Image 1 (tube, rainbow, N blue to C red):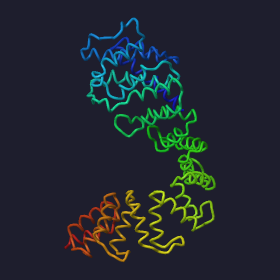
Image 2 (cartoon, rainbow, N blue to C red; image 1 turned 90 degrees about the vertical axis):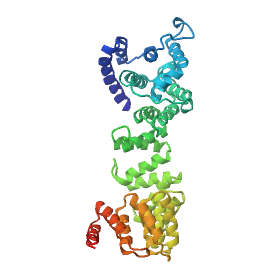
Image 3 (cartoon, rainbow, N blue to C red; image 1 turned 180 degrees about the vertical axis):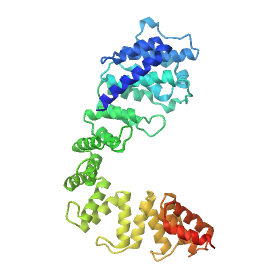
Image 4 (cartoon, rainbow, N blue to C red; image 1 turned 135 degrees about the horizontal axis):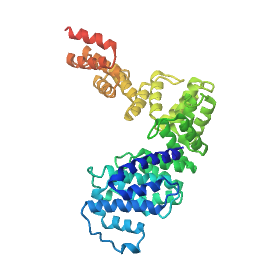
Length: 428
């Protein structure tokens, strides 16, 4: 489990810090050793935060610390909170945002329910203090930080073992921005929430382990988390679990179980599941082929906004498949819907439709536009088609220079036909 991994990692980090601090700071060297015990006292952790803050203030020549109350009448917690409050502006310029928040969080705690996780955060602060504090710190503004909300979540997660707070902390650290994105920390909190049965955390961890985000890719763990969340009714987890049965990922391929879970997710409106059911009915995977049901599934998924279904529906109308009358304009409509969501194949097909005049109206400029959109996304065939358009000069003046450019890009993309055509143009 991740908790065991974290505990092992913390022990290794403590050993490294002991070696580092032995020559730099004997107080830290002695007290870091206390973190190796299973029962870590909160006072010890808060003393470390106090020493870090005092050290930073001394470094910034704040030698006369104006404590509101005499130090001897206060707890360690009260002393460090006083320092944080009184020297807030200065500390904002000296401490990176993640470290600033961690110090506030750790210092604010009244009790420990999860020792390993808090020790991990303390080690982050201490490691930064001894190895990175001389680096440039980006100053953050008050409006950039709602630290009271994050502190409250932290306290609930650690002191009350609140699974929802743990999940929200995981969400905070998984936010896609430079300041907050810390996948290892998000995993730590998601794991705690998942162990308490939080289905959202189980689903997210399934994604992390499936894709290898912050952890080594582990299909078996992904499957376990998806299954746990799906059994609690989590629709997206059910869809991903069905996908694993459908594709034989981590488990033997099983179309019966795949359809069972796709049906479950589809009933809750998961458009991807509805689309995949369309594939199953169209190809007879675990079910009897049913073209009408396949079409209805694709249509419902497309109308829900699922881009792959929109693209597939465009092809159905364009080719007159699954019992539908061929309708180029309807096909065009759904391809354009898919193109709005940057579907590369839709870009290419729109280029083909307009450049060939399949709607009854040939529009080379529109064809070029869509082929270029596909080419910019790396589609090699689109590059070849652009070379053809400029080389043949059908509907536009022939442009050898542009033709060579696009044929050259197609050659780089591995299109052999473009190599021959480029050689021919070079002879002109």
